[in-house]
Image (cartoon, rainbow, N blue to C red):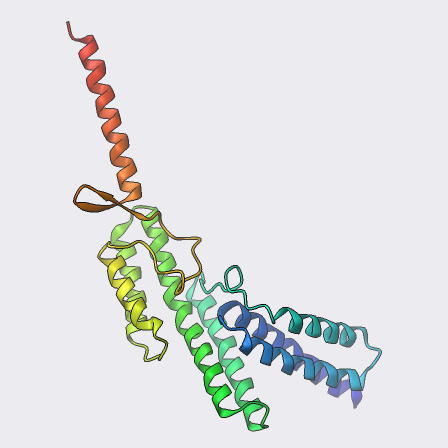
Length: 242
């Protein structure tokens, strides 16, 4: 009987650990992760009551307590990363966020969190849910830009804009994001503000001014190289002339 109960608790604990990892990587405020990890700690201690000397259980308790201390650090940069390489990866992470929402709802039903906390936590989860496909499209657009594939890049940026436009999320950054994506599509800027997208590893070089227009830095570099090359050719030709 005890073994059966322990097996069920272990399964619940391990599933929750996957949810916690996904939430901590995609949700900016760590309050959600702290609450989920506390639920994980409660599971670990329930296992400890059944098997106080079990090595797996002891490690689970120690690891969860250590993580709870670490989660006091609200660092975002280097922790939050919402870019995924495929639709299946996006769907997988979104499913983990949905499971997190289910856990929160269950905890609310027991009185562990207030209605206000539940709504706040769910809004954070919904924002992460929206950012997963949106920022992945933006990253794909950036990668296309790095290959000088401007039409595919524009298509990815437009997909990101549609995703944000179709959402009714109350986060004020949503309207700012629509504006910035429009500017990116119109080639008035190269990337989103860092307060919206901390994932900067795919960002193209910044725009530079050239006369009365704004050009891509990469294009400006190529233009400068061509000018220098043409100048050298002219100098060489003049030297050869009688």
